[in-house]
Amino acid sequence: MLNYTFDWSIITSGKYFDWLVSGLITTLKLSTVSIVLAFLLGLLIAVMRMAHSKPVRWFAHAYLEFFRNTPLLVQIFFWYFGSYKILPTVINDWLNKTGFEFAAAAIALTIYTSAFIAEDIRSGVLSIPKEQMEAARSAGFSYLRSMQYIILPQAIRITIPPLVNQFLNLAKNSSLAMTIGVMEMTYQARQVESYTFKGFEAFTAATAVYLVLSIIITAAVNTYNEKVLNVHKAA
Amino acid sequence: MITFKGVHKWFKDLHVLNDINQHVTPGEVLVVCGPSGSGKSTLIRTINQLEPINEGSLIVDGMDLSDKKTNINKLRAEVGFVFQQFNLYPHLSVISNITLAPTKIRNVSKKDAEEQAMVLLNRVGLSEKRDAYPSQLSGGQQQRVAIARALAMKPRIMLFDEPTSALDPEMIGEVLAVMKDLALSGMTMVVVTHEMGFAREVAHRVAFMADGIVLEEAPPEDFFLRPQHERAKQFLRQLLTPMQSGCP
Image (spheres, rainbow over the protein chains, first blue to last red):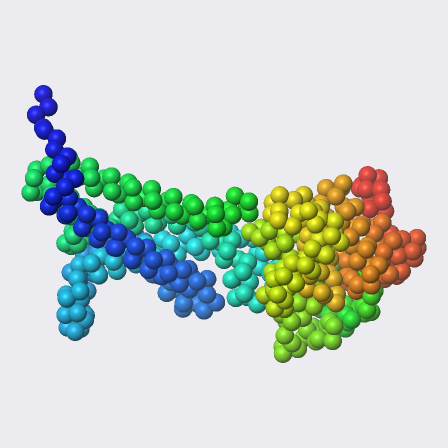
């Protein structure tokens, strides 16, 4: 009954293979840039959320609620279709030359994910017993040094599993960038399907790529945990 | 070494320290005891300003704690503090727990700090645990590491806040032995404890507190044999025979 002929050669060589590879490279670039920026921005927002100054705390809180509670797709469309109307022409020209789609997608993914990362880091810091800070302070460490040597190293260990989740979500969410024309993995798989009608093969390839990407991210962070941070011993 | 003059402290409406006047001389061992909620932990925590005082003057090792210009981190580096719950750094090995402050605050080289740490670990009988993590140690061992960690800063004063209260009975002895050894070496010590055997044997002076007031202070032999204040008598009865004195 099955009248579909599988043709895997389409995706393993030739033009369509090259399309898929270029899609993979764009996905890797978009994910890597956004993961690094989202982590740094998340760390900053987390620190602002715990700051002594009320306006700073309030700003960070508003930021979190705003970006966590609106759909990522709307945010991507906002940066792509909305932001250029308020940006100066000079910046728009520059962005158009360097790839505005990519920039808009990276900004949206970074900001969206940073809100989740900030909350994970903050809850990690809050879960460290206050006696640890007392022990550090009574040894003669200043507040910032106590954070640096005693509190943050423990908080980051606790935060790593939820951070991995955020990194994985970001890598998978990067597929939404196709909606604004970023030629990443999903976009290219869709292209291959349009040209060849080999949808099964094309999206199987895309699925495999996302799966392998996720497994690599998880394994890398777990190895870092075990080998560098000695998490199993320092329970 | 430590001088309290008319020190008061409030937690909101609660008067936790009421007109404390105490003087601890170099090499002296002062034991502070009293029922729970008497303010004894607060008292010892004011000495390295884990709790700030509201009124009066407190001078520790020549530094005035009521003066805003006093460098509090410098003072804390000179005063070792041992907690009831040990509070070792769980992400660091035993040896790193001990060397962290000397290397980062005193800029001692890693090699010198580790040599010094091994001397201290020997002194508390735990040299074979240098690479263990706190979670792999018993409570008594953790507390002995915590004492070594405090001593690594070469403090001029050591403070102990109920150092044996969180320990199983069979581990109390090993910690008290280390503390006794330290006292005999001439360290100035303030110890909040209910270990009356330790107080009797090691303390030069016992201060009894209740409701934020030092009600009685005396050499241990006088305090234990001839307590003056009714609250002190009651407290000692309860410690020695908890079953009989439970009901009025």
